Length: 119
Image (cartoon, rainbow, N blue to C red; front, side):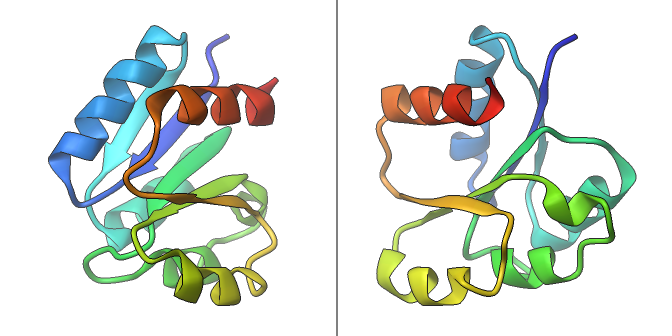
């Protein structure tokens, strides 16, 4: 069975790129373009991993993660951001954040990171 990944980013190009790459790597990928949409999908479906932009319309990544219902609040999450320093301080409040990925990111590193989390 393919593992399912949710990509939440308001930039369509990022969603498309990650969907293409991760699908090629053998994963099933779904997308959301706002924090609200991401929250709704995470509470309605089962995901093995979430890649989420920090700065999203409606709710930012941490606001989404704080509102997750159990057991979805245990889903491993990679937060993507262009402003790493401020985000690292907030990370302590969310136990399911595996790492913070700086934008722009290296596709090879993303694939290796995803494989290491989902192995």
